[in-house]
Length: 414
Image (cartoon, rainbow, N blue to C red):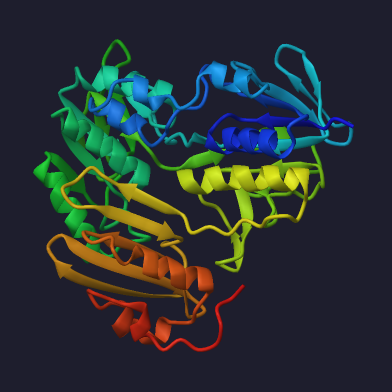
């Protein structure tokens, strides 16, 4: 009997799942439903487009013909408004009803709104979709000064966009350094100096109390809680994501911040799966539930979910994610869960070379590398093997660290 698979979301998780389903079950009916108006594009490269470094063409990954060639029914500009889990159906905003044997929810998230006055003014931008990138690029090319809010991985992209367009900026941060949950002040100062060189000034212990606008509703000023004012005809906000779980509110599917799934991407209902940013998955390497929005992680989750939709239990999700920043003259890479753990180690080797590892129960669970990325494969190997190594930090932090210098007891974890 022909199986019917429906995927909600055409980001890299949903698209990867569709491709894998077609490979694993050639005769199945596969439908992808997305509220976006264009097929899969590269979220990693949209920042380069907004910086003016790339034209639109290389950003797209799949056009509609890619789905047609694989007999995948792609429905753009379509919003799912209701899911009947027990009845195995869903309804779209146009009233169309789709039946499914297995459902994958890969709806990702929506940028969190800053809860202050005039945060919806003209000139205030969030950065998540290709449409966002187009709006940012069009506006920043005409801007004179900017304010960026959000001291994380998306915030730094917005800061780099203003710098690339030669727009002077203020980067408002709540703490004493950028990405303070993963970097110490010493490590983050490398990033701060690179921003300053590009006319983006970090402002610490700051934030936004409200925005001021002109008579046309265009943002003009950011006012921080201290009363300090910063001129800004362009504002970029990246303070996190709200995960799109609303569609499951009246269903038996278990959700917390995201959709709770096991290591096979299955929810608490055997026919409903989830993948990508939206999942709270059973992280076998961390030993607890986790979320991870990195591109590679989402792509792998989509593929793993699809394999288990066809044959549950066939393949668990075990993945050490990576996230790189390419805005500066030195490389930057985070991996795993650098903001978690119960112990840490760090070392600085030069003005542009620093690294930090996060440990949990003696095992590496994440890290950040600035300047020299060569140790990443060794640290990831130790993570995947779940080796207890926190008692050998002096070796791990050596600039030219090698695994065979460690004393490793027992056999690697399966």
